[in-house]
Image (cartoon, rainbow, N blue to C red; front, side, top):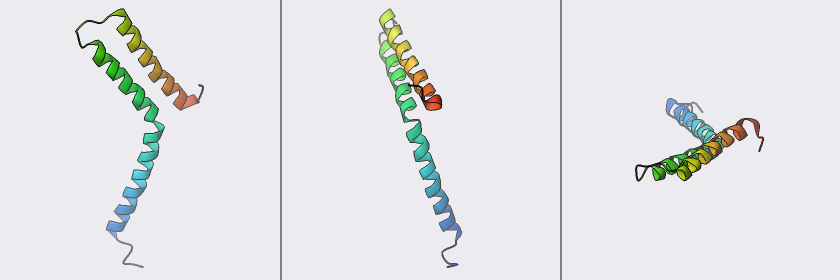
Length: 79
């Protein structure tokens, strides 16, 4: 039994527990990360030609509001 209780096994167990915890956290924030990526894509698409039209501004604002909605849903589960 004492052969099993070693530093390498302890660090292995800590790694497994930490990996599981990070997986749970990542799944919780998955929606927010997706929405932030959408904002980034909208900004990249809007600034391709160097000009920002009114339609592109509205699209960016919509995506930013989706990020805010995802943050609110994470905290209070309203929608």
